[in-house]
Length: 457
Image: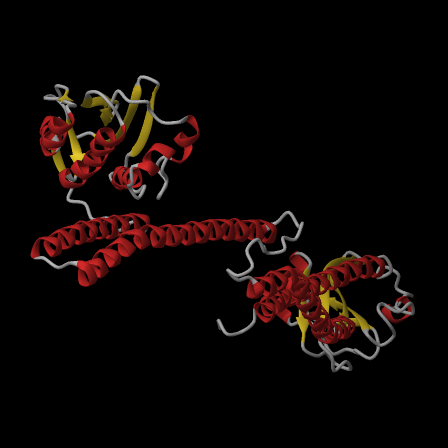
């Protein structure tokens, strides 16, 4: 079924629906006409009975004379006048004296009018319907029987049936063809979008699907697909920029490492010179390893696969652990790290990842800021904010909007090295916890913080 084109499926569904509608309509018309003809025949029988009942009292008038005016058409109507004992006293040709009613029916007719049908009567080899009514003739009770054949009704219904059997399939074929054409017209915008989609590629950015101005589901589908293409193109541009920036960042330490090794091979003549070259090369290898780890973390976070070992974390322990890791650098730089009291705060997260995020913020504060570095935790509704504040020059206003992007560095950071991944990793870790990353401050220093869910209790 799925291999059948939509156009044929729509046309087939339309054809089935039309067949049901035509069959139901035909049956309704046929049944309605049959009921109408039966009702009309009953009415004519009653009118005929009333007309004949007026002449039965005249002894010189016979039913044959009274039926000179045809009932339906000549030879298809009949009448009889029957005594209470069932004897036929007056009749019309070709019925003759052959009784239409049985004795029991005559007795019932004397009590009130009855109506029935006969498969055949004498002289008429056709089904007929009769009406028997009680009449009075000379003070004696009689039964007047009037009837007519059902051939006209059967012929009319047969003619209608034949017309429906001919016109119905023709109408069904025309409706199916119209449905097929209509489905083709309706699906033409879809085919146009399909052809355009087949030609869209990454080598020709900016191409979009044609959107028909139909104000219906097709227009909304085209708009949604174009929005999807916008997102994919934006993601492609981001990934290409990421690859280019990563290649640029990897090229520098690799070039330095190659230079150090070549110098050591060509010009080192003593063990001390070789040892110094190996140490410099080792530092570049460490830098490459850290850069590769950072890139892997960002790639995994972008795919939603950053693993977290979530558990309740004591904020005070987290701040103390991060401050102790950077204590030797702070002492060497003469810049103290101060942790605010956060004994009553707990948060829900991965302590190692949170320490990594705060460590990046403290590292940036020691590298680019001045004065005391303050690490604190603050409650914020159902979240906990982890702040790192320094007393440096803060961030340039033009840098605030792109500070958390990968490989984004302001001018001061460019002169002091760094790949520009620290704040991007901070945001990735915060978002993996269901939180967010922010920065603020001004001339009095920089304030960078992450917001993560708090723990109950």
